[in-house]
Length: 434
Image 1: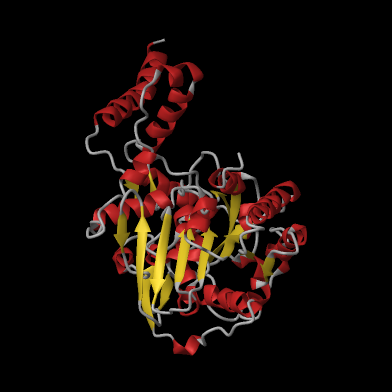
Image 2: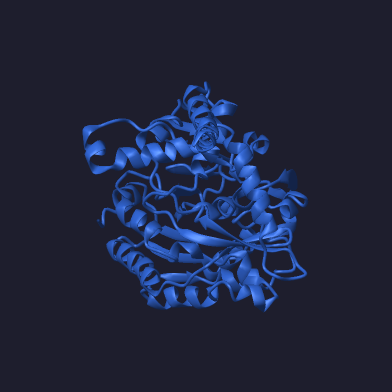
């Protein structure tokens, strides 16, 4: 009996001590550098949350994110994931993931952290926190549960075709275009594929639904008055080039450039030759999918971020409660984990670019973060470019278009927004359709 009691004590004592240490630990971190995301904050207590059970769910998530020695446990988990792989001569792993581009609307508290005057620039720590908040893989409305294939030193999101969600997305764009039918405003749709679509090895490519079929399915459902952009072929013709990151779910700026050429040619215009751009490099870069997988192979072969410098003069302003002027390629993010945040300075509720191209042309890009590397190539073609992120935009979108005399609207999203209804729900909410 005494031996059993000692066994129980030795079992419970470490748990008790860990619990006490966890509760008393000072200076709990706000972000996880290892996972490149914001950690859950202590939930606010309300009677409504208590009776609905929401308070305890939020507290459980907070406790899990702020558990003592958590970073060490995450590293151990990453090591275990690396040991678990499909039988092959190659290093292959499947990792569960939340869709990185499809985050819920940021609440007012998050937005408040990014406000500032026109003259003020964000402190480095504020930029760092905003980076991780933008890339937080949230378990809230708008999240997408999916999988990531890790093949040697490359990670790729796996797409799952969803006919209902794809139609839901197409129906939204049709509804949006109908609201602009009498406004002399042209609507474009550009859906970009992800890296796994262009794999040569069919064994792994077949883990993902054929993305061209998904894109074609959506495009066929769109009203003929909507111009569809075939970025797929432009990317497919250049798969021998560095058009996707190995460690991140985004395309590179070069991949975005080829999609830009497809867009400009669809407008019967001539794209600017890539040779005219001055290029700078930022390295090393370990992106969102490295943070998801913690793959040793990816860590051993990090990415490089290539930056194509704008060709003409411009002024770029992002808007929260107050406007903030920043560069299109915001090098303050070069020192952060999320170096993709260099493009447009990351994701903001909305922004406006005024260029030296005085041709009267204006376009609005309604986007996920894939558009961040794409938009800078538009500068030589437009006098004004408006950038809208439906995850944060709160103004009346149709009044905004009319008041600013915008005559072109481009929806630019990657194909995983059709995997479920989350992102489209945000688009509909932004547009007042709910």
